[in-house]
Length: 255
Image 1 (cartoon, rainbow, N blue to C red):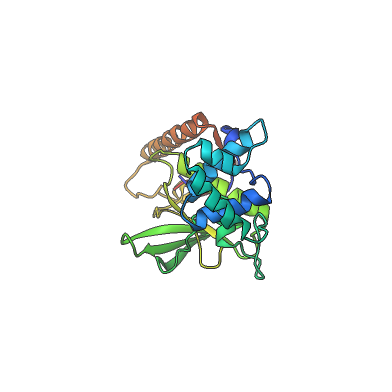
Image 2 (cartoon, helix red, strand yellow):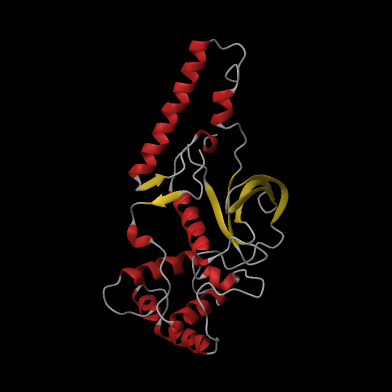
């Protein structure tokens, strides 16, 4: 079953995306990422903690409290941050794409994928996203890579895209396609890789004249469809228990 960009996180509200507090926090985050003090996941956790805080706090103070850095290390990071020009949240370059560092500050890997993924074919295309079959040269397997379409890279679309990837990655169930990695592509836009599931949609199974098997009778076909529906209900029930709802549940989105 595919959980696409139509997912809404109805629970876990403290984990929603929040910008860093103040220009210096953004510059400090950039310095920490560039110097390897923080990775994208740790930065995401810290920014979420900042968003939950009921009293004014800085990113540096939170890093100290969490034991991420020592006082001396933080002083060095702050000196590095002082040398960084103003950083705009979701800053765009002349082509309208998101820079890798600004994407990283919102939880995407700061390192471009480079030559890791070799494109094979296009699997599907929706209103804002494109799913490609690619070869992962590092581990030697074929995976699916989802990215935003060119021209669909507004701040809102990017935030929804990243939220979709994280929600799908959080759903650990055999009926949900697992997410492998959140990456920054060569043009600076975010993407995420997941298992490449090859099969037919439930739509095709429903409308096939023989239900996909010429040897099946009417009763056998109905039993097969009921089995599919039963498994589908189990997946949806699991998602609901995790505080997630699927807003576009239809046979086309079930493999």
